[in-house]
Length: 146
Image (tube, rainbow, N blue to C red; front, side):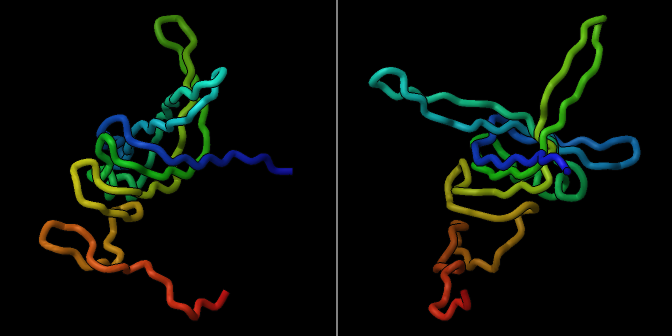
Protein backbone atom coordinates (compact mmCIF):
# COMPACT_ATOMS: atom_id res chain seq x y z
CA UNK A 1 0.00 0.00 0.00
CA UNK A 2 1.32 3.43 -0.94
CA UNK A 3 1.18 6.31 1.56
CA UNK A 4 -0.35 9.66 0.68
CA UNK A 5 1.44 12.99 1.03
CA UNK A 6 -0.74 15.67 -0.59
CA UNK A 7 -1.30 19.27 0.48
CA UNK A 8 -3.66 21.90 -0.93
CA UNK A 9 -3.62 25.43 0.50
CA UNK A 10 -5.26 28.72 -0.36
CA UNK A 11 -3.78 31.75 1.34
CA UNK A 12 -1.89 35.00 0.88
CA UNK A 13 1.81 35.51 0.29
CA UNK A 14 3.64 36.93 3.31
CA UNK A 15 6.48 38.36 1.19
CA UNK A 16 7.61 38.62 -2.41
CA UNK A 17 8.91 35.35 -3.83
CA UNK A 18 12.67 34.82 -4.16
CA UNK A 19 14.16 33.16 -7.24
CA UNK A 20 17.57 31.49 -7.17
CA UNK A 21 19.50 29.17 -9.44
CA UNK A 22 21.60 26.14 -8.56
CA UNK A 23 25.08 25.71 -10.07
CA UNK A 24 23.51 23.43 -12.68
CA UNK A 25 20.92 26.09 -13.62
CA UNK A 26 17.86 24.64 -11.87
CA UNK A 27 15.38 27.37 -10.91
CA UNK A 28 14.22 27.47 -7.27
CA UNK A 29 11.47 29.82 -6.11
CA UNK A 30 10.83 30.22 -2.38
CA UNK A 31 7.80 31.94 -0.84
CA UNK A 32 5.61 31.76 2.26
CA UNK A 33 1.83 31.52 2.49
CA UNK A 34 -0.37 32.62 5.40
CA UNK A 35 -3.63 30.71 5.81
CA UNK A 36 -6.19 32.33 8.10
CA UNK A 37 -8.56 30.33 10.28
CA UNK A 38 -11.10 31.19 12.96
CA UNK A 39 -11.39 29.48 16.33
CA UNK A 40 -14.18 29.73 18.82
CA UNK A 41 -13.04 30.43 22.36
CA UNK A 42 -16.04 30.53 24.67
CA UNK A 43 -18.59 32.79 23.00
CA UNK A 44 -16.14 34.70 20.81
CA UNK A 45 -14.37 33.89 17.59
CA UNK A 46 -10.69 34.71 17.17
CA UNK A 47 -8.71 34.82 13.94
CA UNK A 48 -5.46 32.90 13.72
CA UNK A 49 -2.90 32.66 10.93
CA UNK A 50 -0.77 29.65 10.07
CA UNK A 51 2.40 30.19 8.03
CA UNK A 52 3.84 27.73 5.52
CA UNK A 53 7.16 27.89 3.64
CA UNK A 54 6.88 26.73 0.03
CA UNK A 55 9.41 25.75 -2.63
CA UNK A 56 8.68 25.58 -6.37
CA UNK A 57 11.33 24.28 -8.78
CA UNK A 58 11.92 24.24 -12.52
CA UNK A 59 10.59 26.34 -15.36
CA UNK A 60 7.34 27.00 -13.46
CA UNK A 61 9.36 28.72 -10.74
CA UNK A 62 11.09 31.00 -13.21
CA UNK A 63 7.94 31.98 -15.06
CA UNK A 64 5.66 32.67 -12.07
CA UNK A 65 8.02 34.18 -9.48
CA UNK A 66 7.56 37.75 -10.74
CA UNK A 67 3.79 37.50 -10.09
CA UNK A 68 4.20 36.21 -6.53
CA UNK A 69 4.03 39.48 -4.59
CA UNK A 70 3.25 40.07 -0.93
CA UNK A 71 -0.51 39.99 -0.32
CA UNK A 72 -1.34 38.03 -3.52
CA UNK A 73 -3.83 35.22 -2.92
CA UNK A 74 -2.56 31.89 -4.26
CA UNK A 75 -3.52 28.26 -4.37
CA UNK A 76 -0.68 25.82 -3.75
CA UNK A 77 -0.76 22.08 -4.40
CA UNK A 78 2.13 19.82 -3.48
CA UNK A 79 3.60 17.59 -0.81
CA UNK A 80 5.30 18.00 2.55
CA UNK A 81 9.08 17.59 2.73
CA UNK A 82 10.95 17.29 6.01
CA UNK A 83 14.46 18.76 5.84
CA UNK A 84 17.01 17.86 8.57
CA UNK A 85 20.52 19.25 9.07
CA UNK A 86 23.07 20.10 11.74
CA UNK A 87 24.23 23.66 12.37
CA UNK A 88 26.79 24.68 15.01
CA UNK A 89 26.47 21.26 16.63
CA UNK A 90 22.67 21.51 16.97
CA UNK A 91 20.20 19.37 15.06
CA UNK A 92 17.69 21.42 13.12
CA UNK A 93 14.70 20.59 10.97
CA UNK A 94 11.86 22.20 9.07
CA UNK A 95 8.85 21.10 7.08
CA UNK A 96 8.25 22.81 3.73
CA UNK A 97 5.64 22.43 1.07
CA UNK A 98 7.29 21.20 -2.11
CA UNK A 99 4.89 22.81 -4.61
CA UNK A 100 3.97 21.03 -7.79
CA UNK A 101 1.36 23.57 -8.90
CA UNK A 102 0.77 27.22 -7.99
CA UNK A 103 -2.25 29.22 -9.11
CA UNK A 104 -2.74 32.96 -8.80
CA UNK A 105 -6.15 33.75 -7.31
CA UNK A 106 -8.22 36.82 -6.54
CA UNK A 107 -7.20 40.35 -7.36
CA UNK A 108 -3.70 41.68 -7.43
CA UNK A 109 -2.61 43.35 -4.17
CA UNK A 110 -2.20 46.68 -5.97
CA UNK A 111 -5.56 46.91 -7.69
CA UNK A 112 -7.29 45.30 -10.68
CA UNK A 113 -8.71 41.81 -10.59
CA UNK A 114 -6.68 39.10 -12.28
CA UNK A 115 -6.52 35.35 -12.22
CA UNK A 116 -4.17 32.92 -13.91
CA UNK A 117 -2.29 29.70 -13.61
CA UNK A 118 1.35 29.17 -12.90
CA UNK A 119 3.29 31.27 -15.32
CA UNK A 120 0.64 33.97 -15.25
CA UNK A 121 -0.56 32.88 -18.67
CA UNK A 122 -3.27 34.80 -20.49
CA UNK A 123 -6.56 32.92 -20.43
CA UNK A 124 -7.93 34.72 -23.44
CA UNK A 125 -9.51 37.53 -21.41
CA UNK A 126 -10.04 40.89 -23.02
CA UNK A 127 -8.62 43.73 -20.96
CA UNK A 128 -9.38 47.41 -20.68
CA UNK A 129 -6.69 50.09 -20.64
CA UNK A 130 -6.46 49.80 -16.83
CA UNK A 131 -5.79 46.04 -17.18
CA UNK A 132 -9.11 44.81 -15.78
CA UNK A 133 -10.97 41.92 -17.46
CA UNK A 134 -13.83 42.84 -19.74
CA UNK A 135 -16.81 40.54 -20.03
CA UNK A 136 -17.15 37.03 -18.63
CA UNK A 137 -14.66 34.70 -20.39
CA UNK A 138 -15.23 31.79 -17.98
CA UNK A 139 -19.02 31.74 -18.39
CA UNK A 140 -20.37 28.29 -19.28
CA UNK A 141 -22.82 27.71 -22.08
CA UNK A 142 -26.18 26.07 -21.32
CA UNK A 143 -25.31 22.92 -23.26
CA UNK A 144 -22.55 21.64 -20.96
CA UNK A 145 -22.35 17.85 -21.59
CA UNK A 146 -22.36 16.79 -17.94
